[in-house]
Length: 101
Image 1 (cartoon, helix red, strand yellow):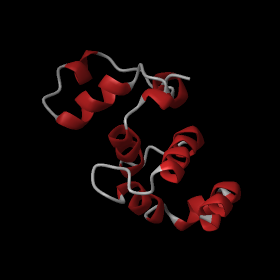
Image 2 (cartoon, one colour):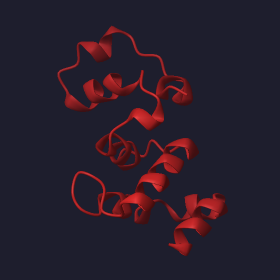
Image 3 (cartoon, helix red, strand yellow):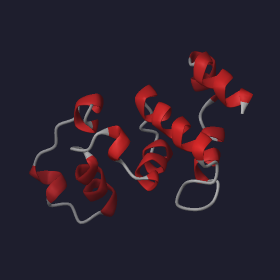
């Protein structure tokens, strides 16, 4: 599923004309499937609090292959640790898998 459909977002010309890097980056990844996103993109989505189960599922797959992935070593692990307590409570399956690691 493309990120644009998952997040149910439509952007107009305002993003394309933006001088800021975050909106440009975000618009640039909208037409990618989740599995096509880079480690940087996955980490940044989580860092920006754009958290959907499908994004976290991809993050978990990548984390188990390489726990040091991200823009810097361990960034994704840090992003998991920074998720709100309520997220962990509301997503017990994800929480269990992370605890097993």
